[in-house]
Length: 116
Length: 114
Image (cartoon, rainbow over the protein chains, first blue to last red):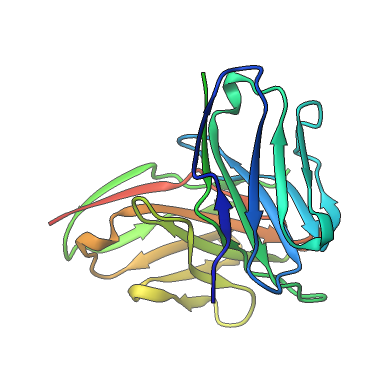
C-alpha cells in the first residue's frame, strides 16, 4: 500500500513570496490533515478535511494560509505571503474514516520550508 | 485547551539499557493515545496506540506503553534499547469531542550509544 505522498520535499523562498505544497493521501482515506512542525516542537494541526469539506481550521492563520481539497482526494496548502516564522516542516497525514470511532493517522515525509 | 507534556527532551542511553519516556496530558475525559517515532531522515511512523481495553499496549519493535488514567500518563517503555532505536519520539492525544484532532507533545530525542 502506497503511503502519503508530498511534494516538494524542500523549498527555500524569500519572505513575502508565496509557496504551495501538495499532498496525496493514502488511497481510500477520507480524512486529510495538514500539520506545521517548527524545529524542536511537536506537530501542530493547521486544518482537517473530511472528504472535500473542512472539519477544523481553527489554528490556520487565514490571513496568509489557505488550503483546499478539491474532489476529496489531493490537497494543496498555500502560504501567501510567507513570513520568516513560517519556516517549518509541513506534514500531511491521512486516516480512514470510522464513524463514531477513533482513527489512526498516517504521515507523509513532509515539506521542509525555509523562509529567508 | 488540551496539552501534552513530554518531560525528557533529550535522552542518551547505552545499548541494552532500559528506556522509559514520560508522557502526560491534561484532558480529563475519554482519550485516545498514540506514540509516534521519527527515525533520522524518515517520516513519522506509528509505534503504538491505545483506544480502549487493556491499558498495557504492545507496539512494534519491542516497545510498550501503559495508560494510567489516574495519573493522566501514557509512558513508553522498552526493556533493552538498540542503536537502531535512535530517533525522536512523540506522544499524541486525541479526546472525544475533538473530532480526530491530535495534540502532540514536544518530542523526546533519544540517542543510543553503541
